[in-house]
Image (cartoon, rainbow, N blue to C red; front, side, top):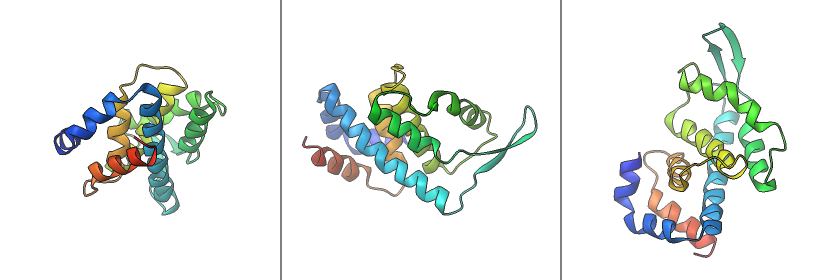
Length: 157
Protein backbone atom coordinates (compact mmCIF):
# COMPACT_ATOMS: atom_id res chain seq x y z
CA UNK A 1 0.00 0.00 0.00
CA UNK A 2 2.86 2.40 0.73
CA UNK A 3 4.06 2.55 -2.88
CA UNK A 4 0.54 3.25 -4.15
CA UNK A 5 0.17 6.12 -1.72
CA UNK A 6 3.55 7.61 -2.47
CA UNK A 7 3.13 7.43 -6.23
CA UNK A 8 -0.41 8.82 -6.20
CA UNK A 9 0.29 11.93 -4.15
CA UNK A 10 3.91 13.06 -4.06
CA UNK A 11 3.02 16.73 -3.62
CA UNK A 12 0.71 15.96 -0.69
CA UNK A 13 3.45 13.85 0.86
CA UNK A 14 5.90 16.73 0.46
CA UNK A 15 3.32 19.15 1.86
CA UNK A 16 2.74 16.88 4.86
CA UNK A 17 6.46 16.59 5.61
CA UNK A 18 6.85 20.36 5.28
CA UNK A 19 4.31 20.97 8.04
CA UNK A 20 5.50 21.87 11.52
CA UNK A 21 5.33 18.95 13.97
CA UNK A 22 2.18 20.21 15.70
CA UNK A 23 0.27 20.37 12.40
CA UNK A 24 1.52 16.92 11.34
CA UNK A 25 0.15 15.65 14.64
CA UNK A 26 -3.25 17.26 13.95
CA UNK A 27 -3.37 15.57 10.53
CA UNK A 28 -2.51 12.24 12.13
CA UNK A 29 -5.15 12.68 14.83
CA UNK A 30 -7.83 13.51 12.26
CA UNK A 31 -6.90 10.54 10.08
CA UNK A 32 -6.78 8.20 13.07
CA UNK A 33 -10.22 9.44 14.18
CA UNK A 34 -11.42 8.28 10.76
CA UNK A 35 -9.57 4.97 11.21
CA UNK A 36 -11.22 4.57 14.61
CA UNK A 37 -14.63 4.88 12.93
CA UNK A 38 -13.58 2.16 10.47
CA UNK A 39 -12.57 -0.06 13.41
CA UNK A 40 -15.80 0.60 15.31
CA UNK A 41 -17.92 -0.09 12.24
CA UNK A 42 -16.13 -3.42 11.78
CA UNK A 43 -16.74 -4.36 15.42
CA UNK A 44 -20.40 -3.40 15.32
CA UNK A 45 -20.99 -5.28 12.07
CA UNK A 46 -19.97 -8.55 13.71
CA UNK A 47 -16.38 -8.78 12.48
CA UNK A 48 -14.22 -11.60 13.83
CA UNK A 49 -13.27 -10.68 17.39
CA UNK A 50 -12.18 -14.05 18.81
CA UNK A 51 -9.01 -15.99 18.23
CA UNK A 52 -6.96 -18.83 19.66
CA UNK A 53 -3.59 -17.87 21.10
CA UNK A 54 -1.51 -20.80 19.84
CA UNK A 55 1.28 -20.80 22.42
CA UNK A 56 -1.12 -21.63 25.29
CA UNK A 57 -4.09 -22.71 23.19
CA UNK A 58 -6.42 -20.30 24.96
CA UNK A 59 -9.42 -18.60 23.39
CA UNK A 60 -9.10 -14.82 23.44
CA UNK A 61 -11.60 -12.06 22.80
CA UNK A 62 -10.48 -8.80 21.23
CA UNK A 63 -10.90 -5.76 23.47
CA UNK A 64 -12.96 -3.64 21.10
CA UNK A 65 -12.58 -0.54 23.31
CA UNK A 66 -8.77 -0.59 23.17
CA UNK A 67 -8.30 1.60 20.05
CA UNK A 68 -10.78 4.18 21.41
CA UNK A 69 -8.98 4.17 24.76
CA UNK A 70 -5.64 4.59 22.96
CA UNK A 71 -7.04 7.50 20.96
CA UNK A 72 -8.41 9.08 24.13
CA UNK A 73 -4.99 8.69 25.76
CA UNK A 74 -3.40 10.56 22.85
CA UNK A 75 -5.90 13.37 23.29
CA UNK A 76 -5.18 13.50 27.04
CA UNK A 77 -1.42 13.14 26.57
CA UNK A 78 -1.03 10.19 28.94
CA UNK A 79 -1.89 6.51 29.23
CA UNK A 80 -5.16 6.94 31.06
CA UNK A 81 -6.57 3.42 30.63
CA UNK A 82 -3.56 1.10 30.93
CA UNK A 83 -3.46 1.03 27.14
CA UNK A 84 0.21 0.08 26.83
CA UNK A 85 -0.23 -3.14 28.81
CA UNK A 86 -3.51 -3.99 27.10
CA UNK A 87 -1.96 -3.82 23.63
CA UNK A 88 0.64 -6.50 24.44
CA UNK A 89 -1.39 -9.62 23.71
CA UNK A 90 -3.27 -8.52 20.58
CA UNK A 91 -0.16 -7.09 18.91
CA UNK A 92 1.75 -10.33 19.59
CA UNK A 93 -1.21 -12.33 18.33
CA UNK A 94 -1.34 -10.27 15.13
CA UNK A 95 2.39 -10.70 14.57
CA UNK A 96 2.07 -14.47 15.20
CA UNK A 97 -0.90 -14.65 12.80
CA UNK A 98 -3.15 -15.91 15.60
CA UNK A 99 -5.31 -12.81 15.23
CA UNK A 100 -6.13 -11.78 11.69
CA UNK A 101 -8.26 -8.93 10.44
CA UNK A 102 -9.03 -7.81 6.89
CA UNK A 103 -6.18 -5.58 5.67
CA UNK A 104 -8.07 -2.29 6.08
CA UNK A 105 -9.13 -3.18 9.63
CA UNK A 106 -5.62 -4.28 10.58
CA UNK A 107 -4.24 -0.98 9.27
CA UNK A 108 -6.88 1.00 11.18
CA UNK A 109 -5.89 -0.87 14.35
CA UNK A 110 -2.15 -0.34 13.78
CA UNK A 111 -2.55 3.35 12.89
CA UNK A 112 -4.16 4.06 16.26
CA UNK A 113 -1.64 1.88 18.08
CA UNK A 114 1.25 3.73 16.42
CA UNK A 115 -0.35 7.12 17.11
CA UNK A 116 -0.49 6.09 20.79
CA UNK A 117 3.12 4.90 20.74
CA UNK A 118 4.30 8.12 19.07
CA UNK A 119 2.50 10.64 21.23
CA UNK A 120 1.97 8.91 24.57
CA UNK A 121 4.96 6.60 24.84
CA UNK A 122 7.27 8.93 22.85
CA UNK A 123 8.45 6.00 20.69
CA UNK A 124 10.29 6.88 17.52
CA UNK A 125 7.52 6.25 14.98
CA UNK A 126 7.77 7.74 11.51
CA UNK A 127 5.07 10.38 11.03
CA UNK A 128 4.23 9.13 7.55
CA UNK A 129 3.73 5.54 8.77
CA UNK A 130 0.77 6.67 10.87
CA UNK A 131 -0.69 8.65 7.96
CA UNK A 132 -0.14 5.78 5.55
CA UNK A 133 -1.79 3.23 7.84
CA UNK A 134 -4.75 5.48 8.64
CA UNK A 135 -5.34 6.25 4.97
CA UNK A 136 -5.03 2.57 4.09
CA UNK A 137 -7.81 1.82 6.58
CA UNK A 138 -10.22 3.25 4.00
CA UNK A 139 -9.56 0.28 1.69
CA UNK A 140 -7.91 -0.29 -1.66
CA UNK A 141 -10.54 1.57 -3.66
CA UNK A 142 -10.49 4.75 -1.57
CA UNK A 143 -9.20 7.99 -3.04
CA UNK A 144 -6.52 8.41 -0.41
CA UNK A 145 -5.15 11.57 -1.99
CA UNK A 146 -8.57 13.21 -1.69
CA UNK A 147 -8.92 12.00 1.90
CA UNK A 148 -5.54 13.44 2.88
CA UNK A 149 -6.18 16.65 1.00
CA UNK A 150 -9.56 17.03 2.74
CA UNK A 151 -8.01 16.34 6.13
CA UNK A 152 -5.27 18.90 5.58
CA UNK A 153 -7.83 21.47 4.43
CA UNK A 154 -10.04 20.77 7.46
CA UNK A 155 -7.19 21.61 9.84
CA UNK A 156 -6.29 24.67 7.82
CA UNK A 157 -3.15 23.72 5.93
